[in-house]
Image (tube, rainbow, N blue to C red; front, side, top):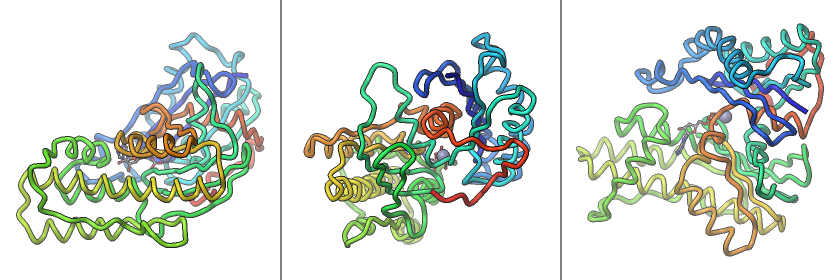
Length: 333
Ligand code: KG4
Ligand code: ZN
């Protein structure tokens, strides 16, 4: 079964073709990130205008590159929320049009579910076994979810303020780094040489009987340091390292707590922050202690892409009418 997956929830325009929910036949992602850099974050209007321009070329590239035509596609999937309304509309309306023009079923998926299913895009290795605790860490969301089976998402906890990716982005901005901040903080943290120990940052909401998160406090702590001191490059590297370490520790601690409470077999991580090597390293240590298997998507599949949408549609396959499907910017889990 070949599913065409379309992803346009934020600043990426992604189209992919995935066979049987696991084999990526083609996967094209165009990002408007360079246009947002000077503003320090995504400008919704700019993102949507770029997506109008990019969606057809990206679609063509995804099909032409692998010599595919509409006859070889079995269904069209799109992420219909949550996200930026202008951006969502481009992907959703494109998917609806293709479903009507090519007479194919239309499968709408939740962008957050799709991030989880990026972990099913593997060919020769084991798939996550249920029950699963899924940690979704993206630019807009931070959620812990219990999955007892495909499509069964039980919300355990989430952020009470900033999402993890959002905190990376905002701390990067405070330190004078461009958007998106996650990869920049990771790079800068790698420069820390441990010769100084000037700053302390809090471990945000690490304790307590809940699975919630809060990242605005640690962001403010960094902001206050930036006002109090004239930060040198070494200072910034120390702060980047300690910020990244604290955020990862909390994410790992709460995920581990959920995994042991619900006696799960797998921990699955998805979303842009899943591209972070320190998060992967810390989470993998949990896997070794508890013998719970830990899954991370490949780096390019952690950030927004059409392949995860197609994989998700393969497993959840809830069809919708191409005449009535509507984009939903605040779609819940
Ligand atoms: O899932 P995603 O591509 O888009 C949303 O659905 O929001 O996630 C984007 C987020 C951004 O906040 C970005 O800074 C963060 O993922 N990110 C990272 C890394 N790569 C991307 N955060 C930490 N470390 C990274 N290497
Ligand atoms: Zn995303």
